[in-house]
Image 1: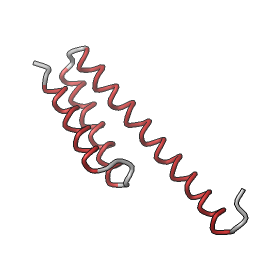
Image 2: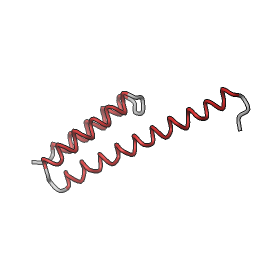
Image 3: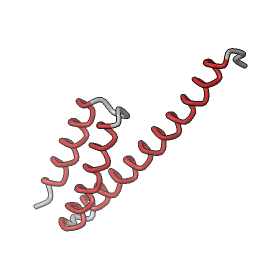
Image 4: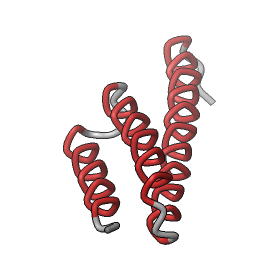
Length: 87
């Protein structure tokens, strides 16, 4: 265990950030699964609404530094491409 006050604070801050990041990533994974489920069911309307929600979450995570901007771009691109495969 850390003895120095600043080290103790870093431990607390890191734990808080870890929990926030983990929660956001979990939420994004759930949103992506909803998009993929809608695509599997060939439900264009549901896929479009799920895509909009997922993209918003992914871009918000990118703006907060949870994901790198290229990672955000790749995730959004792949999801959009997947939804566009529905005829």
